[in-house]
Length: 229
Image (tube, rainbow, N blue to C red):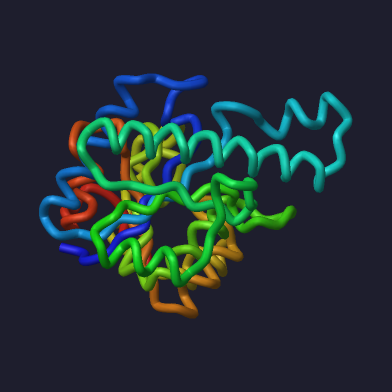
């Protein structure tokens, strides 16, 4: 069982824009982790609110689009924090993009909160354009000294030798290395994020969050996906 985890959620995982039942399920699973003594940080994407294709159609430049995406992740972080508090979990939203009188972020604040068993929900990505939320997750995992990034996917239960939708003989890796990801340019995690994890000895665990209680199982190291070391 891991002692401190960074849970990476896609924005789509929360519903479009929000599914109260999904928020409740995620919150209750995080609650179980906290009750078992696991310290939890969470990074959320913003894809349920805005997508890159929409930005392209509007003719926005990449920098402006990325800042809009960061704002979407902050909204998602606040929604999850509210759901956690509703379920009796001490939680706080922290954001790399400062929201005056509401949110900010510092490594020291996050570490202090985690030691007090407060769930930290990180919004704003890296706080800078041109970086993915995968990279933001890797940086936050580094900051809080997380043992692992739990990469919760929708309908994808790990990394395969080939596309299982088109190749019935494709098999799932139980374990692989970040070198495998980097050399073969596998799209399961952003290459910059993979490099950060490799350098800082942070594991990544790719699993399907659509299966009941899989977040809890992943945090306990159950063999439900692919571990990347």
